[in-house]
Image 1 (cartoon, each protein chain N blue to C red):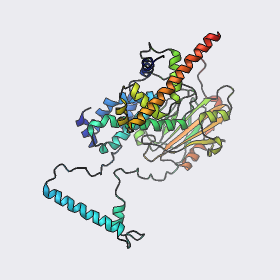
Image 2: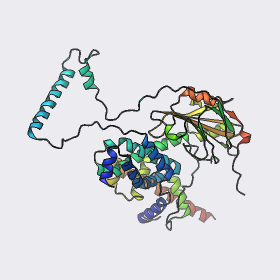
Image 3: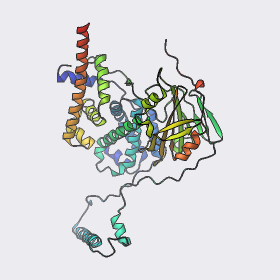
Image 4: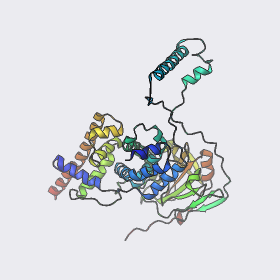
Length: 183
Length: 275
């Protein structure tokens, strides 16, 4: 991320901000999509986050921290979108997440469905830490810094999310076993 | 799924699935929005002055000292400074200008004359709207379980301008058939997890709708900063309808527009089930 671009954007240069938007929007959208599990909500969260970033950019003290700063704004936008969607949505079914199919040699359909269901039951703050850790590969200290939370809080959110997902998958595996035995 | 490594591989593979590219329309919408969105002013005092020589330090210390004395006198000196009749200097010190400014209050919306009629080609209703508005017909059915939001293809949109960045009011309408065997009450409960008995009611044509969302939105969530969003749900003859009104609008605006709705569920077009 070019420090000069951030500096220019801080001073109101819209072209500079547009360049920053092009640099960060894919990564932000990918994260929002994985946290919210819905393309439309992720798109709304991305827009809200980028517009908020533009408005608040003059307050950014360390231009080299722009990327982490905008990720924090994004996560809060995701929380807001999720709250809004609970009011606006009719969503009671588990919907498949749109998008290209990635590598899945480690992933059975049952695992995938179970992960999807279990993940959607997690609180948003746990989802965010899980995505930053397992999708972006960030260490907990960096996640804590990015999200503006204590490292211990990040660790405990990851712990609870991991435990919930593990339990869900293990329960599913147990059910498969039971069904197999009864058959 | 027996060990930590297997769990991590599985979750990583699962997380890899999904969209990785921000839609162009979202980026364009952002770039369009910032054209008319001012940045907040940064009024905070820098922690350090870039150059601070000795005379400057002495002067700065003197100013800070005077300020401390002034503030102390204001708050501890008794007299009129701490009471209702405090002087202007005290008022200024007690209410510093915030580094961010809340959205300026919007002018009270006035309900324009509703002289035109929009008839949805897919969703089985019509509504009256003011002259000069831009109409965008929905091009898709509203899928079950799909969250609503501005700009979706399954929502009809009427806008009080030709371009989004100039608009101050917008209404959207959509509908879907209830699932087989589903009652109106169940659809409403599924539709929103609140307590239906507590939702305010509003006339939608000759029906009674429920205001299921009534509040301000975060930045970017409505047409104008400080704007309002209303969402109204109603079931008519086995069909669930949703209307959203947002921007510089109020309850009167909502009531005026929704009162003109005419339902015609039989004319709605739904996708036929795949064989």
